[in-house]
Length: 303
Picture (cartoon, rainbow, N blue to C red):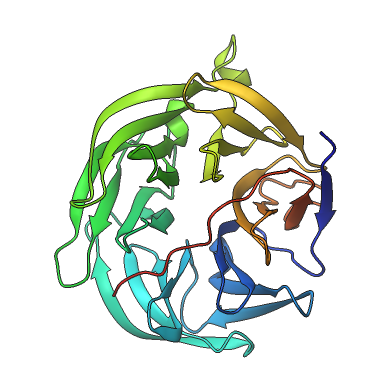
Protein backbone atom coordinates (compact mmCIF):
# COMPACT_ATOMS: atom_id res chain seq x y z
CA UNK A 1 0.00 0.00 0.00
CA UNK A 2 1.31 3.41 -0.93
CA UNK A 3 0.03 6.28 1.17
CA UNK A 4 0.97 9.95 0.89
CA UNK A 5 1.65 12.34 3.78
CA UNK A 6 1.28 16.06 3.00
CA UNK A 7 1.26 19.16 5.23
CA UNK A 8 -1.78 21.41 5.34
CA UNK A 9 -0.93 25.05 4.53
CA UNK A 10 -0.22 27.37 7.47
CA UNK A 11 -1.51 24.69 9.86
CA UNK A 12 0.97 25.05 12.73
CA UNK A 13 -0.13 24.47 16.31
CA UNK A 14 2.43 24.25 19.10
CA UNK A 15 0.38 21.47 20.68
CA UNK A 16 -2.09 20.46 17.99
CA UNK A 17 -4.89 18.22 19.29
CA UNK A 18 -8.52 17.21 19.02
CA UNK A 19 -9.12 16.91 15.24
CA UNK A 20 -12.85 16.77 14.49
CA UNK A 21 -14.30 16.57 10.97
CA UNK A 22 -17.51 18.56 10.52
CA UNK A 23 -19.55 17.39 7.52
CA UNK A 24 -21.81 20.46 7.40
CA UNK A 25 -18.95 22.91 6.85
CA UNK A 26 -16.57 20.41 5.21
CA UNK A 27 -13.99 21.57 7.73
CA UNK A 28 -11.50 20.07 10.15
CA UNK A 29 -11.63 21.72 13.56
CA UNK A 30 -8.71 21.29 15.96
CA UNK A 31 -6.96 23.14 18.79
CA UNK A 32 -3.63 24.65 19.72
CA UNK A 33 -3.96 23.39 23.26
CA UNK A 34 -1.50 25.50 25.24
CA UNK A 35 -2.29 28.68 23.32
CA UNK A 36 -6.07 28.71 23.91
CA UNK A 37 -6.69 28.72 20.15
CA UNK A 38 -9.17 27.02 17.83
CA UNK A 39 -8.33 26.26 14.20
CA UNK A 40 -10.49 25.37 11.20
CA UNK A 41 -9.16 23.88 7.99
CA UNK A 42 -11.60 24.64 5.19
CA UNK A 43 -11.36 21.80 2.66
CA UNK A 44 -12.77 23.74 -0.29
CA UNK A 45 -10.57 26.78 0.28
CA UNK A 46 -7.54 24.70 1.35
CA UNK A 47 -7.00 27.29 4.08
CA UNK A 48 -6.65 27.29 7.87
CA UNK A 49 -8.47 29.89 9.99
CA UNK A 50 -7.31 30.50 13.57
CA UNK A 51 -8.95 32.21 16.52
CA UNK A 52 -7.90 33.14 20.04
CA UNK A 53 -10.46 32.40 22.74
CA UNK A 54 -10.78 35.63 24.67
CA UNK A 55 -9.41 35.34 28.21
CA UNK A 56 -8.36 31.68 27.89
CA UNK A 57 -4.88 30.13 27.86
CA UNK A 58 -5.90 26.51 27.30
CA UNK A 59 -8.15 24.79 24.74
CA UNK A 60 -7.98 21.02 25.06
CA UNK A 61 -10.67 20.00 22.55
CA UNK A 62 -13.34 21.45 20.26
CA UNK A 63 -16.72 19.73 19.81
CA UNK A 64 -19.39 21.31 17.56
CA UNK A 65 -22.76 21.55 19.30
CA UNK A 66 -25.83 20.05 17.63
CA UNK A 67 -28.19 22.58 16.09
CA UNK A 68 -25.94 25.56 16.85
CA UNK A 69 -23.56 25.99 13.90
CA UNK A 70 -21.34 28.61 15.57
CA UNK A 71 -21.16 27.10 19.06
CA UNK A 72 -18.50 24.67 20.29
CA UNK A 73 -17.80 22.88 23.56
CA UNK A 74 -14.18 23.56 24.48
CA UNK A 75 -12.07 22.33 27.39
CA UNK A 76 -10.56 25.36 29.14
CA UNK A 77 -8.54 24.38 32.21
CA UNK A 78 -11.05 22.15 34.08
CA UNK A 79 -14.18 23.80 32.66
CA UNK A 80 -16.15 22.76 29.61
CA UNK A 81 -17.34 26.02 28.12
CA UNK A 82 -19.40 26.99 25.08
CA UNK A 83 -17.42 29.17 22.69
CA UNK A 84 -19.08 31.15 19.92
CA UNK A 85 -17.02 31.38 16.72
CA UNK A 86 -18.01 32.05 13.12
CA UNK A 87 -15.07 30.00 11.85
CA UNK A 88 -13.27 33.05 10.47
CA UNK A 89 -12.87 35.80 13.09
CA UNK A 90 -9.51 36.05 14.90
CA UNK A 91 -11.19 36.29 18.31
CA UNK A 92 -13.85 33.99 19.80
CA UNK A 93 -15.84 34.43 23.02
CA UNK A 94 -16.91 32.14 25.85
CA UNK A 95 -20.69 32.45 26.21
CA UNK A 96 -21.37 30.03 29.06
CA UNK A 97 -20.00 27.14 31.13
CA UNK A 98 -21.52 23.68 30.75
CA UNK A 99 -19.76 22.09 33.75
CA UNK A 100 -16.50 21.97 35.70
CA UNK A 101 -14.55 19.10 37.27
CA UNK A 102 -11.78 18.76 39.87
CA UNK A 103 -12.16 22.35 41.05
CA UNK A 104 -9.70 21.75 43.89
CA UNK A 105 -6.97 20.27 41.63
CA UNK A 106 -5.49 23.45 40.20
CA UNK A 107 -2.57 21.57 38.63
CA UNK A 108 -4.93 19.50 36.45
CA UNK A 109 -6.52 20.32 33.08
CA UNK A 110 -8.73 18.72 30.48
CA UNK A 111 -7.01 16.69 27.80
CA UNK A 112 -8.69 14.69 25.03
CA UNK A 113 -12.49 14.53 24.69
CA UNK A 114 -14.97 13.31 22.10
CA UNK A 115 -18.66 12.78 21.60
CA UNK A 116 -19.91 9.21 21.49
CA UNK A 117 -22.14 8.23 18.51
CA UNK A 118 -25.24 9.16 20.53
CA UNK A 119 -24.07 12.67 21.36
CA UNK A 120 -22.73 12.12 24.89
CA UNK A 121 -19.58 13.86 26.10
CA UNK A 122 -16.62 11.70 27.10
CA UNK A 123 -13.39 13.36 28.18
CA UNK A 124 -10.62 13.17 30.70
CA UNK A 125 -8.12 15.14 32.73
CA UNK A 126 -4.43 14.97 33.53
CA UNK A 127 -1.85 16.56 35.75
CA UNK A 128 -0.69 19.71 33.94
CA UNK A 129 2.20 20.65 36.22
CA UNK A 130 4.69 18.07 37.48
CA UNK A 131 5.08 14.40 36.62
CA UNK A 132 1.83 12.95 35.31
CA UNK A 133 3.33 9.47 35.40
CA UNK A 134 3.87 9.84 39.15
CA UNK A 135 0.71 11.82 39.98
CA UNK A 136 -2.19 9.85 38.54
CA UNK A 137 -4.76 12.50 39.42
CA UNK A 138 -6.68 12.37 36.16
CA UNK A 139 -10.18 11.00 35.64
CA UNK A 140 -12.37 10.05 32.67
CA UNK A 141 -15.84 11.62 32.67
CA UNK A 142 -19.18 11.29 30.96
CA UNK A 143 -21.83 13.99 30.59
CA UNK A 144 -25.25 14.11 28.94
CA UNK A 145 -27.35 17.19 28.34
CA UNK A 146 -29.61 17.89 31.28
CA UNK A 147 -27.65 15.58 33.59
CA UNK A 148 -24.72 15.68 35.96
CA UNK A 149 -21.15 14.88 35.02
CA UNK A 150 -20.09 11.41 36.24
CA UNK A 151 -16.76 9.60 36.63
CA UNK A 152 -16.21 6.69 34.24
CA UNK A 153 -12.68 5.86 35.44
CA UNK A 154 -10.31 7.10 38.12
CA UNK A 155 -6.55 6.57 38.60
CA UNK A 156 -5.73 8.12 35.21
CA UNK A 157 -2.33 9.59 34.35
CA UNK A 158 -2.96 11.23 30.96
CA UNK A 159 -6.49 10.71 29.68
CA UNK A 160 -6.22 10.47 25.92
CA UNK A 161 -7.62 8.76 22.82
CA UNK A 162 -11.25 7.62 22.55
CA UNK A 163 -13.17 5.73 19.86
CA UNK A 164 -16.35 3.69 19.52
CA UNK A 165 -17.47 0.84 17.27
CA UNK A 166 -21.26 0.50 17.13
CA UNK A 167 -21.03 -2.63 14.98
CA UNK A 168 -19.53 -4.69 17.82
CA UNK A 169 -20.56 -2.55 20.84
CA UNK A 170 -17.03 -1.51 21.82
CA UNK A 171 -15.40 1.56 23.34
CA UNK A 172 -11.64 2.09 23.06
CA UNK A 173 -9.61 4.23 25.45
CA UNK A 174 -6.02 5.31 26.00
CA UNK A 175 -4.32 6.42 29.19
CA UNK A 176 -0.91 7.39 27.85
CA UNK A 177 0.82 6.50 31.12
CA UNK A 178 -0.36 2.88 30.79
CA UNK A 179 1.39 2.50 27.38
CA UNK A 180 -1.58 0.59 25.99
CA UNK A 181 -4.99 0.71 24.30
CA UNK A 182 -7.92 -0.83 26.16
CA UNK A 183 -11.25 -2.04 24.81
CA UNK A 184 -14.49 -1.99 26.79
CA UNK A 185 -17.88 -3.53 26.19
CA UNK A 186 -20.15 -0.54 25.56
CA UNK A 187 -23.90 -0.16 25.93
CA UNK A 188 -24.89 2.55 23.46
CA UNK A 189 -28.33 2.93 25.05
CA UNK A 190 -26.99 3.72 28.52
CA UNK A 191 -23.45 4.93 27.78
CA UNK A 192 -21.97 2.42 30.22
CA UNK A 193 -18.49 0.94 29.57
CA UNK A 194 -17.46 -2.33 31.24
CA UNK A 195 -14.98 -5.21 31.08
CA UNK A 196 -11.70 -3.45 30.19
CA UNK A 197 -9.20 -5.50 28.21
CA UNK A 198 -5.77 -4.58 26.84
CA UNK A 199 -5.78 -4.96 23.07
CA UNK A 200 -2.56 -3.15 22.05
CA UNK A 201 0.61 -2.82 24.12
CA UNK A 202 3.24 -0.21 23.23
CA UNK A 203 5.82 -1.17 25.86
CA UNK A 204 9.34 -1.96 24.70
CA UNK A 205 12.15 -3.75 26.51
CA UNK A 206 13.07 -0.79 28.72
CA UNK A 207 10.86 2.07 30.05
CA UNK A 208 12.88 4.74 28.22
CA UNK A 209 11.90 3.09 24.94
CA UNK A 210 8.17 2.67 25.65
CA UNK A 211 6.03 4.31 23.00
CA UNK A 212 3.49 6.84 24.25
CA UNK A 213 0.02 6.27 22.77
CA UNK A 214 -1.86 9.54 22.33
CA UNK A 215 -4.96 10.15 20.19
CA UNK A 216 -7.08 7.52 18.51
CA UNK A 217 -9.56 7.06 15.68
CA UNK A 218 -11.33 4.18 13.96
CA UNK A 219 -12.25 3.28 10.38
CA UNK A 220 -15.46 1.73 9.09
CA UNK A 221 -13.90 -1.75 9.15
CA UNK A 222 -13.18 -1.42 12.87
CA UNK A 223 -9.43 -0.88 12.64
CA UNK A 224 -7.83 1.57 15.05
CA UNK A 225 -5.33 4.32 14.25
CA UNK A 226 -3.11 4.97 17.27
CA UNK A 227 -0.97 8.12 17.36
CA UNK A 228 2.34 7.96 19.25
CA UNK A 229 3.62 11.10 20.95
CA UNK A 230 7.26 9.99 20.80
CA UNK A 231 7.22 7.68 17.80
CA UNK A 232 6.70 9.67 14.54
CA UNK A 233 4.15 6.97 13.72
CA UNK A 234 0.47 6.15 13.61
CA UNK A 235 -0.17 2.43 13.99
CA UNK A 236 -3.12 0.93 12.16
CA UNK A 237 -4.19 -1.90 14.45
CA UNK A 238 -6.70 -4.73 14.27
CA UNK A 239 -8.24 -4.57 17.77
CA UNK A 240 -9.45 -8.16 17.61
CA UNK A 241 -5.93 -9.58 17.77
CA UNK A 242 -3.59 -6.58 18.27
CA UNK A 243 -1.99 -7.07 14.85
CA UNK A 244 -0.29 -4.00 13.36
CA UNK A 245 -1.63 -3.71 9.82
CA UNK A 246 0.29 -0.59 8.83
CA UNK A 247 2.79 1.91 10.23
CA UNK A 248 2.15 5.43 8.92
CA UNK A 249 5.36 7.46 9.21
CA UNK A 250 5.71 11.24 9.60
CA UNK A 251 8.61 13.70 9.27
CA UNK A 252 8.17 14.82 12.88
CA UNK A 253 8.17 12.94 16.18
CA UNK A 254 5.22 14.08 18.31
CA UNK A 255 2.08 12.69 16.66
CA UNK A 256 -0.87 13.66 18.82
CA UNK A 257 -4.15 12.59 17.17
CA UNK A 258 -5.99 11.73 13.98
CA UNK A 259 -9.46 11.91 12.43
CA UNK A 260 -10.89 10.88 9.10
CA UNK A 261 -12.42 13.59 6.95
CA UNK A 262 -12.74 15.02 3.47
CA UNK A 263 -15.78 14.77 1.17
CA UNK A 264 -15.45 10.97 1.03
CA UNK A 265 -14.18 10.57 4.62
CA UNK A 266 -11.09 8.86 3.22
CA UNK A 267 -8.44 11.41 4.24
CA UNK A 268 -6.72 10.92 7.58
CA UNK A 269 -6.00 14.29 9.19
CA UNK A 270 -3.20 14.21 11.74
CA UNK A 271 -2.18 16.74 14.39
CA UNK A 272 1.33 17.03 15.83
CA UNK A 273 3.17 18.98 18.52
CA UNK A 274 6.36 21.03 18.83
CA UNK A 275 6.99 20.47 22.54
CA UNK A 276 10.44 20.34 24.16
CA UNK A 277 12.26 22.17 21.33
CA UNK A 278 11.30 19.82 18.52
CA UNK A 279 12.65 21.11 15.18
CA UNK A 280 10.53 21.96 12.14
CA UNK A 281 8.18 20.65 10.82
CA UNK A 282 6.95 19.86 14.37
CA UNK A 283 3.48 21.26 15.02
CA UNK A 284 2.40 20.87 11.39
CA UNK A 285 -1.00 19.32 10.65
CA UNK A 286 -0.99 16.67 7.93
CA UNK A 287 -3.30 14.90 5.56
CA UNK A 288 -2.72 11.25 4.68
CA UNK A 289 -4.24 9.95 1.45
CA UNK A 290 -4.11 6.59 -0.30
CA UNK A 291 -4.95 4.56 2.81
CA UNK A 292 -7.83 2.75 1.11
CA UNK A 293 -9.91 3.27 4.23
CA UNK A 294 -12.81 5.46 5.28
CA UNK A 295 -13.80 6.69 8.70
CA UNK A 296 -16.65 8.40 10.49
CA UNK A 297 -17.29 12.12 10.78
CA UNK A 298 -17.26 13.75 14.19
CA UNK A 299 -20.53 13.54 16.12
CA UNK A 300 -22.22 16.70 17.35
CA UNK A 301 -22.47 17.19 21.08
CA UNK A 302 -26.02 17.26 22.40
CA UNK A 303 -25.99 20.22 24.78
